[in-house]
Picture 1 (cartoon, helix red, strand yellow):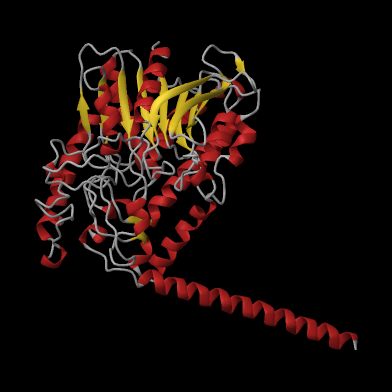
Picture 2 (spheres, one colour):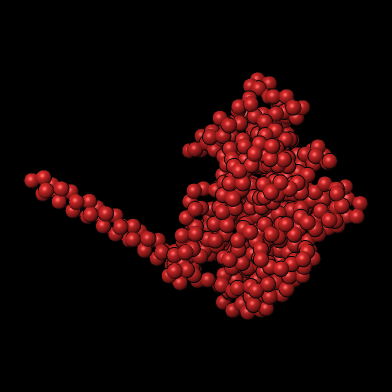
Length: 492
């Protein structure tokens, strides 16, 4: 009887295992089917560019990087722009000449690296954009510094050209380009302070630059680091990106190399997103976390002062990782964190199913914080006017405790119908010509931020969620004010 029971149990166990494997394979096959049933790939998804920079490219200096970039854009013109089939012509295709999305409609092609030298500049600014972006991502910040500083906006490898550039990029490529640009700026400034402004992945690369140097007992290069929506941590799902890419290569299904395949209507940002791009950011974040964990306390104290602007609502990067995996790990050294809360009018607050600030409160309410913090929030549930409320170390170095917080009313308001910021909104003002909300009637260019198309779902190739995503920051003037305050405090 005992043998019969054991045998039956074994058969049931094997049946369960086989059933589980069968279900997993069926789900995998279904997933592959739906991923491969998406729109057909275009030239800009498949063409390989030979003149892109990689970490093993032999270049002597940044001027050679710019020369290579010139050849790269000539290659895009030959291989893509001049060969687009007639059925791909669209009034909102960035690769169609004279379309509404043609980058040539802008006075400057922000897809390329640019440098604005200033011979008597007291400081320099290096600007690093995010994944799938271009130097346009920080163009509003660059304009703020024009004429005041020596400014360099770097086009990171794989960006500004065609989306296929992100299918073969590594985070080491981004780091190597930043090394060249940083060395160039340091040489040009001749000992004057260099500040870096990094958006999203650009912030992660800037942080990596300094962590790598400090871990090798080298002096930091930057007088200060300004991060906007930094990619410190991502959702765990990002770890699965390389598996989707691997399956696509194994089965020779090119569409599986893409998380999204869309019309390229944005002149300065890829709307199609390569699976590899997400994995690059994930691997870079892991590298930075490993470097931070390996630093001694004296080495952590060498990390240059960081000023970060982060929305508590961010669907791209983890806000809690910014707080807990970066700020909570660094000793006191003039670090500052600005959090933009959601619009807490009663009508909005009562519709929220998962309060984004709730998980951060335990961390930022500790009286033992060793950094200065600010929350930009509604003055009350009855008004859209914002206030800046400090926490942690206040400006004068005293600890701000409950009931002794510093609060300053701002002459800034939440726009009607906007319930939160977003990952992409922070670096743009309301008057930005592409992502801002002010309609320019005489413009012959696409204005993404001012779009208010309505109709039935499922008709446009651009998803409703993407069109409705907040594109500009109503508190951008405050962001610039804090950057200037921070920069003056670290001019050494």
